[in-house]
Picture (cartoon, rainbow, N blue to C red):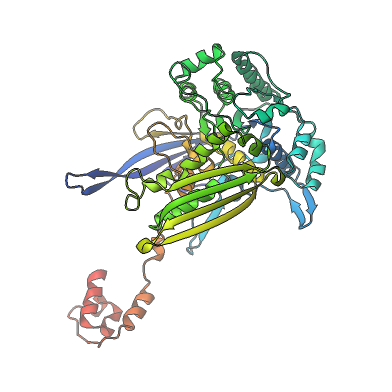
Length: 557
């Protein structure tokens, strides 16, 4: 498949296998002296990027395939492949990928010769997998086929479901892991499609499922993603799961405190497959991360960022950046799908509360003018289960901020959204971006070996509420910074500078603008004979006060 974008630069070269680019990475080192003054020193490091352009045959396996997200996503991908259209009371609708940043958002590539900005799809910056080409499979603790699951979810329009039913009823989730202690007791009536045996035996079966899917569909790669019920947090302690060795030994001993999501992560890593945690529990415990690093496999998490938290990461960034001090943030949700039912249990709600509560921390810490050390806004999150509203989640937020001279300002937001219709394109983006990152490697100038990104794939942070980052790395929650990271890394892969938004080419006054402004100056005009040749002075000089004419001459010379 030909590349949609080619860069004409001596820093970029193309082969039949890869794009090679040299990228000058510029940073600023800040040092504090004894008198508390700051010294900023620009630094530059040259990186060489290598990006494979061969698009693989990709498969995606979802844990929770029969849930609202899994059934909605599967149905939507089929609808897009078949280019389905269906009537609604608002008129005819057609299948699309609205809500996906790889498929429906654009980036500024540059400007044309007349200075007009040219935009391209984010997914066209590099040769990415298209959603229609992704094979899908997965596991669920409930045995309903996906047509039944789609009907139970009540997310998609009925007329679309009718067209999809013959395709969806052929799809059956594989048996999954059910440990009642990790999810709410109210999920017991759904658990009729579960694996038996020890945890070691279950990991072995999961690995066999991955290999079976890969072989049957003739896939090059498989990515595993958890979109099942939120679990309670598991214990993290020495001897249990602090290292890969401890975790594998705990699985061998059939330890109760090894969670189902961690078992899926282990199986995925041992099969060399990227694993992404789309729920808020602590699946990516130190032992899982250690195992991923040993096998050079990506892991990403935690918890899809789809509605209320995404808006919060925008609003708080806006307020703090504007010099306004948020003092209180209160977030209320109610929803009626199975996710809401599971979250009605205290331990599972606590997992969600943690992932939602930390989203403002880095933005608060960025402004020590507004906030003292350790000072934060009051931040409260409430989630209630209301069966009637189904997947149509309600989110209400109140932001109370301190403004000029001790005043207060309150912003109240009401957001009604279809939970799974927001989450489904995020799942696609997570899988597509993670696979793209598997084909990118880089090295510092002078190094001989290319290396991949760190196993903890922090580039996915834009799509996740509580982004996992490598040890010692600052956590970024501000939404626009997260998106700029994705865009600018992909630009570096094709040898383009990051977007600075300075538009300096439009900031300089034109000659006509300068002359007009100077002619409008309401001062007496002093004519002067210039000893130099007439051509050496600006044409406007004879109309200007002597001091101004000399100033312009000095600038232009």
